[in-house]
Length: 303
Image (tube, rainbow, N blue to C red):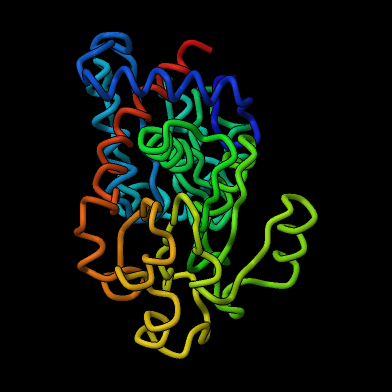
């Protein structure tokens, strides 16, 4: 495979290959430093990004490649050009990799019809974010020594989270017990049915019950930019019921805490817990993301 649009494309052996290579790179970021020399990555981001865009850029440059970041505000899209024509224009410039982030679910699959380069889904709407799931699994494996049969709680704005969807797909490959914790207003009945029928996943509306004795807790950001109307009474009320702090974490004494970022302090997670490096691995996710994306670029280039 030359593209990564969905976790569905990866076999468990391919995931292991990417994570194994990422582990070697994480120990020595200069490993394979010229493997992608003279190769070009274009970051084609329609949504704001700090971690994903920067880590793809750093990853490519550490492999000896070149990076072009497309500034959407200065592109011909602002003159009325369609996204398909823009994709065709990018393709005509013969890049080797294109990473795309867009607010429309499924758009990366559409653009794959017009771009010959290795295409990487860097987040499409509420659909998927496969490289985030890979780096999350990498961090989990580093600390739990395995991905097999772990208990994972994913808590927060499930309705709007592409991170949750990709992580569910990846973690279930390893037989993990995945629990989703969400206010009833942030998950639909159809989504509940899909989770139960497809993945045998239970949805909890009580945080303490959902996180009890799990191995990993993944907190999700409240995505107010995707909300039309009122999904939660207030951020303070949300934090009271669904925000994670040291007191609530006592119900999962062996758990590590992840968050894809950016975090809303004292909304999804307390500031004290976010900064507690003994259990919070948020910054380790960031540094691991570079190694995992280096490994991903090498994997796609090979194939």
